Length: 194
Image 1 (cartoon, helix red, strand yellow):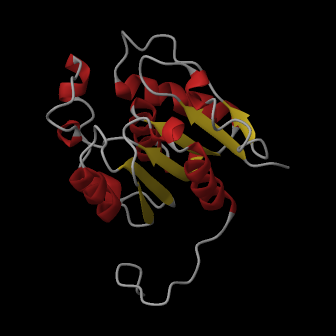
Image 2 (cartoon, rainbow, N blue to C red; image 1 turned 120 degrees about the horizontal axis):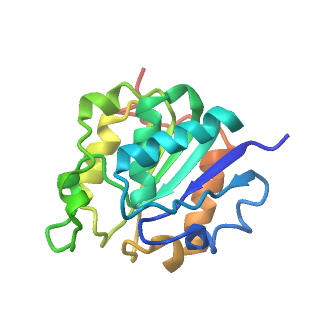
Image 3 (cartoon, rainbow, N blue to C red; image 1 turned 30 degrees about the horizontal axis):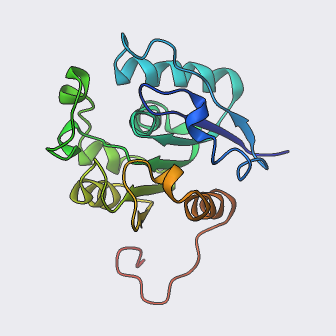
């Protein structure tokens, strides 16, 4: 039976935001819920809805982009037992992770507010993906990667906050590899040294 994969779309969008990914992810049992109350809910409320969904459908991989990435992280913090692998694309764990040039809504100026300690409790294998010219700072993505105990980091060259559309073949290959395969044994580990 195929692994379940829940796609959590960006704010102000709908599941069609993952259009370039659907074919590449067809080997998974895909769920792409549409968050219809984005304008009135905060990130925690949306994460609680995701927890309710997973309680009904069972544990799954989560792939979230932008606000969807934040919701995926919050879902894993609330219920790590419901999350298998986690793909966080262009997301923040704290609202100070947005580049100062980014136009933010009031919610994005105060939420989320996770800490490195919160992330350090997550056992889930996690892929942190970001564009090299993203609305999320590289420093923040690196801090997220360092705080998560079982994380991998992908900085996609020549892309922005829209990296899933800008370089879909490259992004899809990394996502499918991460979700489908076990980690490779590296030759000269520093962070992953046992």
